[in-house]
Amino acid sequence: MKINEKGHLEIGGADCVGLAECFGTPLYVFDEAYIRRMMGVYRDTIEREYAGNGLVLYASKAFACEAIYAIAKQEKIGVDVVSGGELYTALRAGFPAQKIVMHGNNKLPHEICEALDAKIALIVVDSPSEADLIEAEAKKRGMVQDVLLRINPGVEAHTHAYVQTATPDSKFGFSVASGAAEMMTGYLLSKPHLRLHGYHCHIGSQIFEKQSFVLAVEKNLAFMAEMKAKFGFEADALNMGGGFGIWYAEGDAMIGAEGYAEYLKALLSTVKAGCKALGLRLPFVYLEPGRSIVGEAGITLYTVGAVKDIPGVRKYAAVDGGMFENPRYALYQSRYTAVIANRAAEENTELISIAGKCCESGDLIGVDFNLPKVERGDILAVLSTGAYNYSMASNYNRNPIPPAVLVKNGEAEYIVKPQTYEDLVRNDVLPDRLK
Ligand SMILES: Cc1ncc(COP(=O)(O)O)c(C=O)c1O
Image 1 (cartoon, rainbow, N blue to C red):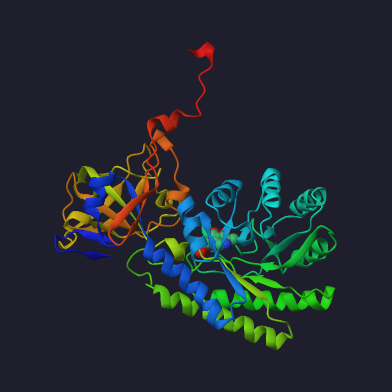
Image 2 (spheres, rainbow, N blue to C red; image 1 turned 180 degrees about the vertical axis):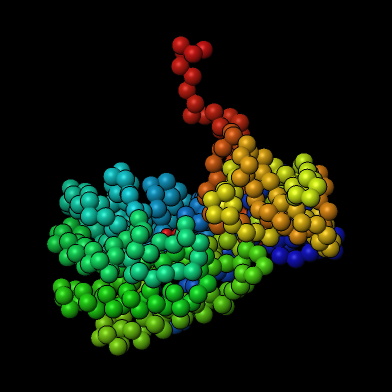
């Protein structure tokens, strides 16, 4: 991103004010080059540092639409899906099933059937009854399904509590410490229609401490060695999850593509050293980055409407979006950086909180942004909104979900069309007796 000669913010060579004029606001904008660079950097690091014995899986919960699966396919990486809907979208975009891994702490029976019928690479088992369901459905189909077991290594990750997933109290995975992971290993090995391929762990999201990831990998390897000793089972694969932090606002590190490569390199070195020390063969590795691939690649453009100054209290600028298209502040008080795209070079002079248009006091994009004086009609850009924004959007207050455009070399095109009012009522049913 840069500021152009008109003083406007630019992303991927496209003027944000021009984008707002052409496509309207609110608008999600994605920089294609950034996404490809991030997918490529992970892919190439595995190639270079681990002889290609692994696969990057884009965690598509971060941002799912047909175009992103098509890009992942072109970049020759895999994807992780967490619902029948994500699986359907990936397949519809022509994504190869053999590079799809399915997650979820409560996969529905029909989602398991869809995964088996599509012949996806792996299902990550997250409960005993789910193992039974997969076993029964695989048996019906006369097939053996490759699975991973999601384990909880008990690593504390320094991030917001709501996105921690590997603490002892987690709805995800099986605790190593409690013996549940060992019990499940034995259980999965006893199932004739499941083939336990290895283990998965994901310790949380928006984590910067490299050491948390390294520790999780070490604990995984130690557990793999224990299972080898206990069951004679040597895992073929280790899925190290996702979770690398991204820059949202002042105080966050700007890691950059090479920096993320260093994170991955540290994990791969840990795998190599750990396997050597423990007498394990090198597993095929998976990494599941979501946020670090699309987060900083995306921004959201808004038009400022009402500006309200409550003297001595706070100044609000309300935009034409809000929690329906970005619920992250309402969910976790997420921080962001905002820029007035039409006056991007101007000095910041005010502290302004950005409110959405929904009927909730908590409907904010954030509080106390440093900005120049904001006026009705300004185009406001909120940065680092590529991950977990569109994918978490809703139609709250019957607001249409904004469209998304993909920008490349200054050219933009829709990858998600705008919803219309007609889309909002598409599934409504008005029974005759109510007419
Ligand atoms: C199992 C799993 N893998 C990968 C991810 C992606 O994490 P991130 O977007 O932080 O890289 C998540 C996100 O919560 C997850 O639950």
